[in-house]
Length: 633
Image 1 (spheres, rainbow, N blue to C red):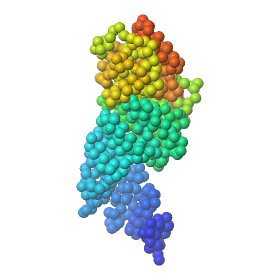
Image 2: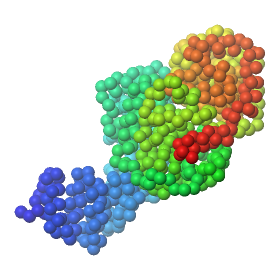
Image 3: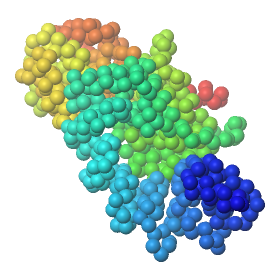
Image 4: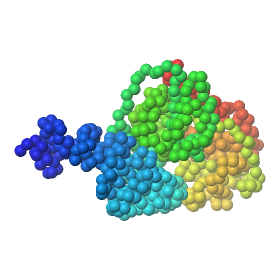
């Protein structure tokens, strides 16, 4: 029996490792045989050698009978080699046969989704399902495309078709329900999935996060206990990767946080080899790039107002890469490039060709980030800043930018990231607009009662925080508490408040409002009681602008020290407490002394003008000084 026949005999028997050596020898004997080349490449593909298989498929001559059958497997190999842009052409060629199959249309739709062609992807996936409605992967991809387009109700319908047979699809349904504001339905979907898959770490993290959003603190604690117990037994599976923002504020301990961050980073870094580049820098101004999906209608974008224009263009050449779905309109960098529709491969190429000296990732491991691009290391140096102010454990970053309040130099840093500390606060901030208006009647607040307030999101709250708040109000019987939370969190907050002895009559609950209304409401309160595990950042800056004192109690990790960073930049260190007992005692003392509160408000209003907290130029100068040090300029 000749080598080709021997190879095919093993191949048909699914003995791929035995077949491949015979295929290779046969191809050496007859290198012009394209059918043999096709069979060899198919065997390589089935063994997981996607890049080598793609190279062979590409060598098949267009006149060969093997050329058309090789189009779809070539597209699959290119896709699996992280080359979706190159895969599009053979995928299009695969459906030019007289009777294309549903899975071929699905492959094209998959590639179009990966390369940002959502509308075309929907058409291709509809063609796939028209030919074969049983293609569960096509239903999943359709849900994914619709979700990316913000068509969450339609996405849920596609996901539900898959979930009937594959329960893990419910995690995608829960994501869409959260986007729709249906938090309780998202919680229920995740709880059902947790019952079916009790060892899944990603499900437990997300479920605990949603419980926190709903202020269901006891339920959150139960899930966290199960999560920690599960991680003691075994590490998460390769396909069980929780999103970092779902566990960032959970009380897991530093070791567990590091473990989960390392696992998430490893899932991204796999199969992504860093690009090579000349180590020496070209002449001219150093090139600084900023990458963010959050420049439009997001806190990060608001904080960066005026920041890019404040750079010294005689010293640095600034590139802004806006990766949001829709471009932001207020970008004022020297070079602005909207890259939201680019695939990872295209964006990696764009950044690499820009020859950036430093690339600043403004997302971190949050929704909309592009870690798959950063893992290729398209810039000489890559740093994380602003979007995720905590340890990241990301091997593609050369460091993260914090400040001396978030990461004190004399404290042990619990993560592997190198920390670069800014001289001032880590936060940039836009210049103050017109002063807010203090009007107690507008918010139905009595003039005679001191009002403590919280404007933090519900997932930043905790049972221990509410225990301190109820104690403060017991000590100051005429004080009121105002909380501003999403309506979905009101019921859970009220239940937790009353279970701790809080009085309903002394509670004012508001829902999110327009930015200028926030400032007016803050100006009408007397004292902002910051959270513990995840403190106010941009909200603390708003409070300062409104003249509202922020009482904060720093914790161990950066997210638990955000308020401290703002207060130090503002020149108000006396509002930084030394532990939770001090937090309660200072709040009580201030609320019992209206004159002291009034004096604090006046100091804050004055410090807004001369502290450089609200100064884009201050933030740009701090970062440019860091860049200069890093580049040895």
